[in-house]
Amino acid sequence: MKVSTKNEYGKLKSVIIGRIAGGCWPKDDLFFNRMMELSTYTKSKLKRGKIPNDIVEITEQELLKFKNILLQNNVNVYRPEPTDWSRSTADYDHVTTGMHTFSARDLLLSVGNKVIECPTPFISRQHEFKAYDVIKQEAMKDGCVWIAAPKARMEDKEMVIVESKMKLTERYPIFDAANVMKVNDKLLYLVSSTGNKAGANWLQNVVGTEFEVILWEDVYSHAHIDSTLISLGKDTVLLNGSRVNENNLPKFMQSYKKIYVNDMEEQTFYHFPFASKWIGMNILSIDPETVIVDPFYQKLIALLKNQKYNVITTPLTHSRTLGGGLHCVTCDLERE
Image (cartoon, rainbow, N blue to C red; front, side, top):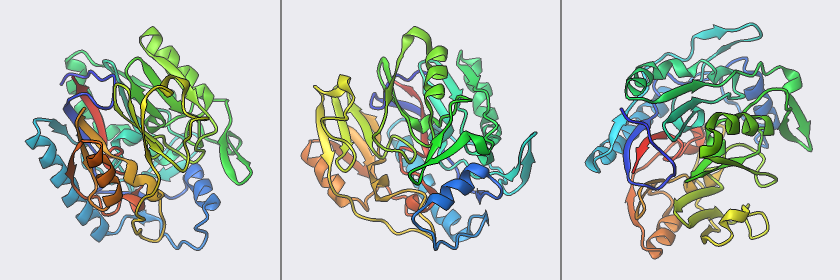
């Protein structure tokens, strides 16, 4: 199992697809609780514990369909081990249930020949890496350098509320893999509620001179980068027009071809949305000319076809409910 990735659009050769079976909305995760408290959906009656079976069954069927599409396009597919995330785990500071491995890209960052287990702020997800043990062992046999970042303790003092938004302190490196977009020799790093500057500094030290970590600040404070910006080619980028403009676009992308998404259909959700309508931008490139998109987002599909992309469609009905689209649920291991 070779690991070799430097961008988000080269021909995809192998990938991890996440799993929702065994998933749980966590109890006693301090960071998760703070995020819920800050939500504008204050009347949500989301029940903590196992994710309802009907959501799990539909989503697992859709992930299997996604897997088959990738296999038909000569992509090797790996899956995390089935795990019951409703079981409680403990460390020195916390006792909490787990969450799920639906969004593999949230926590695993593949870059060059490395896979990094990122220092997520979600306490409930800090034990999630056990589900990737088989994949890890196979990858390391073929020369992959698999690195586990130091885990943040995530006490109250790591989380500061500023103007009703979460801000991480800089005591520990903290970031999700999905705060990072690979752009060849650059790693664009979104500073947000799920990624601090200390995390970017730690990442730069790990990747050394092979990649340059570039901070992207004051763009989107809530969470991850891939509902705001998707790298589609060597000099092409898909942008969320409600968040990105010429003034806040990274300098190295100023000369790129820019495809702005200015409107998006609004998918429904179960009780509480863990993603905005812009999760529709969360698409997967399998080569420089071909993208996989949820068929619900017809405006985006029309935009991409107008730009001469080949568009393959496959659904993720509960992407807003589970907080992940087709890009989120994958972690690319090898691209040409």
